[in-house]
Length: 387
Image (spheres, rainbow, N blue to C red):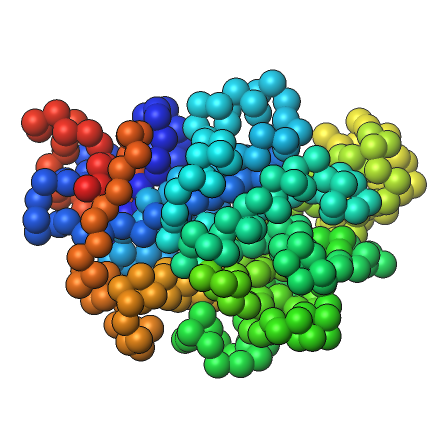
């Protein structure tokens, strides 16, 4: 239905995704619903800051259905950034001190490119530990992605990551391993993108009380969960939020680094991602890069030639999993032990007051809200407020 973003400016790029003339009217009892407040702790590099926002925003928007979600942006100040990145997070993000002094229904903690040999040597490690400890007490459920997964299980249960002999890179078949509310209506087998150099292993996780929800013969453990005090921690070693072109963009980035001499490993072709013709095109380019390695070759990367038949086969299962996650939080917040499918009714019945923290709430909306009056032109109400 609607995802509101809690920012101080109407210039944020996600606002361009809202249909023109649509709005959420906070004064109309007919359209008033309660919100799920979700924090996004975006630890991605500057180049991926905006795309990560977009990916998770779109996935939440697709999953929300009749639910209303408020998305709050947070940044770890110790994450290395350029001048542009520091300015961007200053304009649109809050600091972790703000997060630690409040409660949220859910939080999503992204991964990051590893910079240190050990996770505990990453520049943001001490802040990450604070976030994980806070989330156990102050959220209904918390999602950790990729490197953040490895950090969470290391800190909370001493589960160490293992270096892979080669990058786990591609779209891999997953098998649903058990019945769980997060896996309701998810197919028995489905595909999810992975892009990582490390992994945590099934035996180590099982020994520490984690429940494996999905597993891949090629990529190992994907989704797993554990109740951590008051919060259900949900971990994805893969990337259900990725867009159709995300893996190709990552491959292109890695190829550029190789050609410029910034990395000595020539990247492999993402597996299970492209059709046969597109794979042959990228294999030919990779062979040329190995035999004629020079920065100028990067301009010839054949991105346009390999994207025409690209198919996002993971969107529907990813949408279903995230919808189940939202409904789980609704059900838990309402304090009812109803079946997951009753979550939407529980939301409207919960009677919980919406919360405000002095910032504008602006939204991207589904077409179903386009008929509502625009509060910017009628009574001068603020766009997308949720009270």
